[in-house]
Amino acid sequence: MLRDLVSSSTGWGLARLRMKRMNEFTVMAFLYRYSFLYSVLLCLLLSSLFALPASPVLAQGNRLLPTNDYAYEYIVRLQRRGHLLDLNPTSLPYRRKEISDALSQIDTTRLNSSEHHWVDLLRKKLRPPSTSDDQVAVGYTFMAGTDVINSDRIDPVRPQGDAINFYWHGTAASGYLDAGPVVAEMSLFHSRYYDRDPDGIDAGLRLMARSEHSYVGWNHRWLSAYIGRWDVHWGSSGDASTIISSNARSRDQVFLRIGGDRASVTAILSELDSAVDGRYYTGRAADDSVKFGSTRRFHAAHRWDYRPTRKFMLSFMESAIYSGPGASLSLKYLNPVNPFTFVVDNVPKNDDNNGFLAGLLWAQFKRLTLQGQFMVDDIRLQANTGPETITFVLTGSAAYALPKADLKLTLETVTSRAYNAPQVEGQYIHLNRGLATQFSDYVHTSLSLEFYMDHRVRGLRFGPKVDLLLQGERDMRQPFPAKTESVRNLLDGDIEPTFRGSMRFTYQPVHWWWVAADGGINVSGNNQHRFVGLINAGILLTLDRTIKLWDS
Image (tube, rainbow, N blue to C red; front, side, top):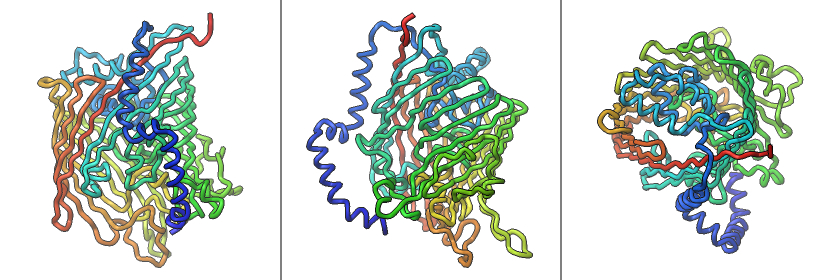
């Protein structure tokens, strides 16, 4: 394989270069090995620096709340109970100010103990702005945490290996400036999982860190424009998505949104990793392209939302991977009112492409919340016999909110050819992680019940969950099947079933620290079983100040 050839020819030189760097920078070597300690020490140092007289603590206005932030768990629970519905339930991330505005409309006198705790926790995390006209908000956010799991992959339903891993993660450096409609944020994030991820390409180098949440933006009531790197998820938090999810590593992108609460259009154009020789993904196409050449890849997505009431929404989404040796940012794909799916093959056609169409439905009936997405990747017709194969993805969830519990049913169905393409550079992946789902050719359903015990122990919740996974042999990273190759449309080859029964616990009495656990038994089709346990814990520190950028 090309990757092996490149690795063998350059491995010794890279090893010598790494040793040289480690010898020259012994402090960097220490921090690389003990990066979690580095995050904690950095938190303590900057806490002392900010322990000076300052203006009242500020909220953040147009800053984006990362899609993996714990706050979304509480937002979703409140939305299931009819609160915070001014926020679009299926378009993440949110701006912090819009969350604060939605929280201010909640009448806390009508909430039970659990709902009151969720609102109180979110308000302390996202406080309303208090700057004067000549001041701007600046600050730092630091997080340190770990995922402990007896698997190489952080996925209890799909474990790989049985070694106990401590995946430390935290903020290596961060900062933001929020001034009126303008915002800028920088975040250098460390994660040991970048280096150990069994599925994705290593996305971090020095300190196992990369820029995960760094962007500049401008926001108005009817128009938003952001450019930078952050995660996007088109679906409710915790649910699967057919077009864009937070599964892949964040990537550099341009974001445009036009419209209001009732109707809006959104466009995203992002840069993906290039394919070496048009056939391989190494993450370092610049190094390999001199000898083998490379194909540049970009991802474009559009979304049209129509929301006639707060409890019903329809969305139409389209997506495309376009690629070529000279591919670059394309105005055709960035234009939010250009339905490129229907005209993408019109001349001038300067790039190859792989397109997708999807629809989304979200509805709420009292305490029952429904969400469904259906994506069509490809339809192949056989003469005189109708459809031969329909490549599609179907995801859905139904959640029923009890006074002190949630009952939830989910379904994911991904066909065998989904997210794949005849040309390798058209595969729906970035750094070997899926832009929507990580796998294909599977059916996964789950049923969970979660109890909220805030009336007894503030911040405690627990409950059982059962998962059923049916996995076929196809994968979106495999060569696309030839026309003469016999491939089932769903669950091709030998089917590997997995049943998992588990219990989940979370304890978060305050907004700045938490601990969670997920333990259960996985039973596979060959009647083998194993225990898989995951523990997550973290601390969060936010330091805010007001400053004057200009003398009055």
